[in-house]
Length: 222
Length: 323
Image (cartoon, rainbow over all chains, first blue to last red; front, top):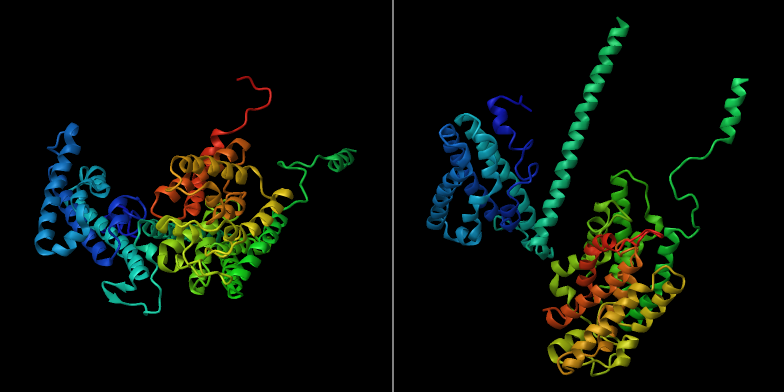
């Protein structure tokens, strides 16, 4: 991983280290509700990323003139502006997707990821850093939603993006379409993600110990 | 001189360790095997009423449950505990609450889910919040609703017995099944749950050797008689009598084998009564006012979730403590 203050890290941290879904456990409402199919997941992730990037940029640009007492209200106004744009664009150009996502597009306004990044990052950092951070978080959200919706879609309807993958003889597991399926899948994904990061850390620690031991042995030899 | 004192002290030293210090010879494994023995009448009744093929259905569940337990214990590098019978018992219970001639692939999937998600993910035996067999059944019901509600006529069926379960028949056609059919199990339903006689033999055996407690089944039956009795007195044409509700569906099987599960039921006496009565209240509500004809599974699962709360609020007062 890149060092923690470089521009590349600002982008990369959203993918794994601080992945909004897997690590920060933010934005659970759209994550659980709309991931019935991959198309929905991608649509939701792109809409959220659009709002996230532009609201972070604007908030970062005017961060010095927003009075501290009314900052949350100001963020909500800025976010709501972009959500309205996203909502109307989706309704005009992708009416089916807009219908499938339903109330979850207007609900992006109260998505914790966006408000969280605005409060925790954009209001304290330069516009360019905020832009990279927002893009990274958006990509992380996108990855999480695509993985989750991919698992759910393939098990419940044997398809991915509408293309049949599993043979006809496979009996679809309908529970995956239901909310229960979303909770089970997300819980298992959390488990796998935590297991992976714990084992990564352990390997890192072992490497450091090994280096230390080797150095000491060399010194003893000398 | 000094050396000697140290040695003599070491000989006399106290053995330190946390309680319990006296262990009962009655181990978890033994209890598991007693429950398996108690289920034999149910297995026999399922073979009598639905044919020898049901042994394959139950066997598949058992094999996959034990195999899942083995694989997960191996992956987690823990002690292999498949010989304690708990995974086998989960498979057996799951098999007995599935419909006859259930597809074997679904049996396998349900068993894997029951052990993997229902039990091992919480840390194995003793840590599970929900009854694993019921978790597996709920998963199958949500995943394959058509197969899980397809019932088969019992082999000894007379003409009047249709393939719908007695509860579904009552709910949708207002036909009450014959009590003797319900008692001996000559009705359609899940493999082990149809014969009240077989369940009573196994359940009373468990209560006599004190593997299962008597409070939970008794409180469930009392609760059922009270709540269903009230409804029956109000309108006998709309609501069936309590005896019908006790004998039909999975009520007795749930009362004796599912609700009395050691891990997922309350540990205090007061809690057990509360637990049993709450389960029967939920069953009465689901069966009479819900969309589904049967609600034992959901009632027990819901009360499983409430068990820690019940335990916390029914802690007995310490002897001699002032109020």
